[in-house]
Image (tube, rainbow, N blue to C red; front, side, top):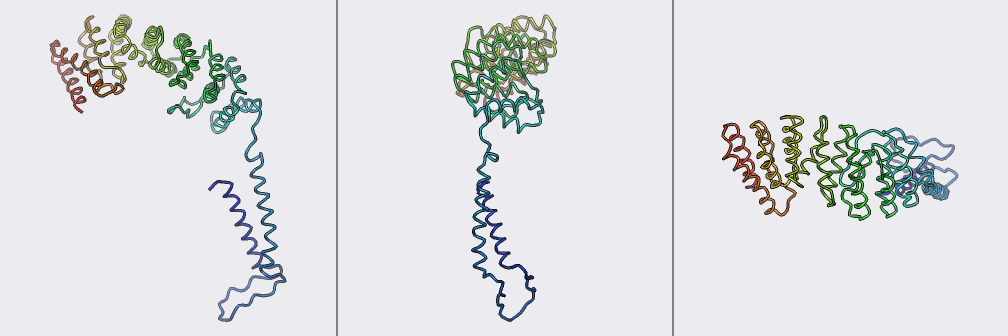
Length: 385
């Protein structure tokens, strides 16, 4: 039952109850004693018959219901649309991140304004204005679970308006941005878009996004790099591998957390990934190699055949036994689930299994052979499932 219906029903029942009370407790008379009697009860005269009292209550009931219904339909209950100036002033006045309901209401109001509010939002994005509301960026599917700042909300408003004017305005508003978080929001929120304007415009922004990664706080750069890497993985464009290599290089700097970019580089070019690994090794020694090996251990979507090719090239350059052991311990033990159909997935994993078996015949120390045997056993078991 709708809230409006519930309210009106409650009013009717309340008024009827009042009317019945009036009939029982007539003015000037006390309630009848609550005694048990075998005599027939005869209604006392009240000056007004019960039917007359009910008839008198009916107009009052009708009038009260009419007034309640009018209030429910009034603008004060279901607010009339406000001007874009009022809507923008409201969201700009929100400073407390705990006011998530107010933030959400403003978001819905701005989206409802459509193209009329696009120029003003674009101007705000160009101005660099922002308001930190705190919290983390939360995205489930294509729905934002919470807005940590004003600019994230404005970017999503334009996404939800979704018109050509909104899309072009968004690209214009963020072009040349020096805020790495802008690129995080853009590439995360539009990661599945097929709109040609957005795809071309976002591809043109990738170089700027990577530049901003260099100066970003390492603790925040991870989410930015993840959003950009996810976009790159989904789209083809000229210079893609160059950008990924630069992102991977930044990700291996001390204090950085990005490992997604390196796994993507391995899938795009095992040869360039091995060159970068040697570069990292020259700078950081064995610690650099261990960092690279750890990155591969988290690469669930990395094709196993490309991974085998990368490790084969890298080992040929001459790694120490400890460095090789680090890779053996972290190489994935399951097929790449993103590869379809199942026959292609098995064939891809078989390339890694063949590499491991070949290494088993080449390693001479007991610890290396044990670690390889364990890796082979786990991968074979996964392929049998």
